[in-house]
Image 1 (spheres, one colour):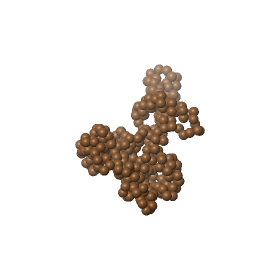
Image 2 (spheres, helix red, strand yellow):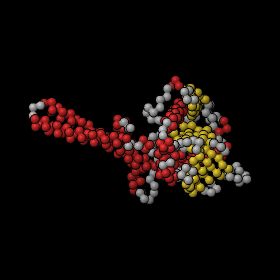
Image 3 (spheres, one colour):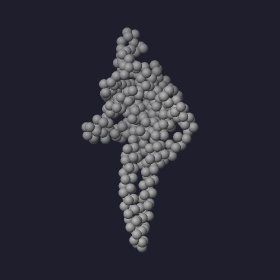
Length: 363
């Protein structure tokens, strides 16, 4: 359940963000052009922040009203202590009963608002990990295609993106790329992307015109907030090395790349995208925290009943979830047995129809 004091702090931050002249301008332009075009990324951000601000405002108002009622109850209890005016005492007793009833109602309403506070809709960071699977270089190229697809989708949603680690190849793809999305309703839209993505197409290097099948795996990791995950410095083994690019060529000669081993779990994470050693270390720690949270959630899920377990069975890395068939211009999601055409548009970031279908199906 959300903490009121944390929400008050966030409320102040939201007011500051909503006073940004650029965001206001984007929002006003979006209102002027409604019906003629889709809102800009800035307008989307403004609408989301405004919606969240209004929700938190309701909680704060309820809490303020609750405090006032408690104060009035205490005032009436002080009147009862005087015991001089029987009529006044009778009025105080009646008012106390009425106020206590109202207090119960307000406490219930406040609790409902807090418990109904959708954590998935918070501006929470999500870490996306895409890794080449079977298919050699073609799988690496497909990994790059998925990265660009999600990047363009994120841009359309007004999310901020930051690359945390990448291992590119000379042809332009990636053996692996890890990046972060933040500032938006991200997890609720991205949570169904976790799993094995399969591509069927004719590679540029294929002279015989044969269709090849390759795969890439996608993992969607929530970035921990607050006290969700505590990492002790003594549990870490940190190594620094030279960052390298395609073909093993050094990006620079300084020891800027970071490798962190979490000794209790055996997890190893790296980051080499920044020229700054400290920033790479922070990136690697972000990846590690997200992976530790994923492990924790998987362990907790395994203890739940079958029905509940099925409801939160997202991000299964080994499950083949989707096929991108280029010769037939078709994308098929195997979980809901639904297909979409115009594959080029989908690869250009138009994921809304797929996200909407998956959300409605509640897989």
